[in-house]
Image (tube, rainbow, N blue to C red):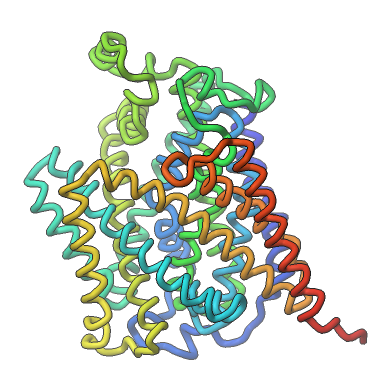
Length: 496
């Protein structure tokens, strides 16, 4: 429990101290925001700050900081360090800088900002890449919740249709009509669940593995986990530490803010809050898998079922959604079961809806189309829906195949994080500001995604040490390219 408490305090102090440092480096001011200068009643609308925070939190969270943290904690106490250090010095900086750049550039999306600072070719590549990612996320988060809901009541295809109709509404309607009203309620329920579980942890005071007990791969030693900590841990825990998906969602809220000075609370603060969610669930996962917690919270018949089979390990028998259901129902009772349902069903549905809306906005920026008329929004949304339906049909016919694709999506979010951090580094360099706060995370995330590309058996599957060496070379070359550009391309700041 000591590691949990220290990590919790570190996240809060990180927001209060390092968050202010990052804010001071960027330098928010009182210039008119896009919500005021480009108000259109559809995407550019001033919303209350607390509502924007809740929407931003739910948009970037979904089930990521829950499921990802549970699976990331399989590696052991090292997950604590990644959540805290990754969130404070990587993810929150990534979210703040990318969100504020969008805010300062008329609410532009990630692809447009990348083109502005990394060049036209990078913009074109990222338009295609982010569109694919948004539609994959949207399609994935239609079918999975439908399966869960059909187990409670109704037919699977009925729920698929209902969820997709909801997606159409969130994509087409003004941001304050559906997203602005429903998302804060779901965000509050998720926060209530996390606070309640945190209180139960403090009351129970279970014996948990601590950071100083060892940072090795506990999952490999005790749970039969086949992956190495680096780079798998840093891809598994994305939401809650660093995730490039957030940079695709922040522009939606940048178009609803009335002041740049709201940025630290909304962008940096939402990421720290997501880190706290991940921290709580990582701690619960440590308790469940490494401290025998599963024997304390599982019904006797579930324990008997596990002990009566030998084909599956503990982490294969108890997947992340199952752990959420068992913990919430055991610790929080019937009300906890409802909260678990919201976490497993409502959160991914809202994330999927936001993904389709983000896809529409990416197309609108790419083609320069105004979105004030229903006709223009419909023309851009139709191809998004068509591709989403095609992906959904493929997923229904190949459920296991989509699981493989989802591994690439998880890696893809970290690729976007690396690109976003490099983009922010170029911006800070051009503005003669402290670019090291994004350069170091950019180098680290470049190392993570390139190493994963080389070593993952689902991609190249190279030898571990060879992959690490190649990733190091790629990272150094990227850093050298930046250094040469900075030395040759940026005029020195004139002295007063």
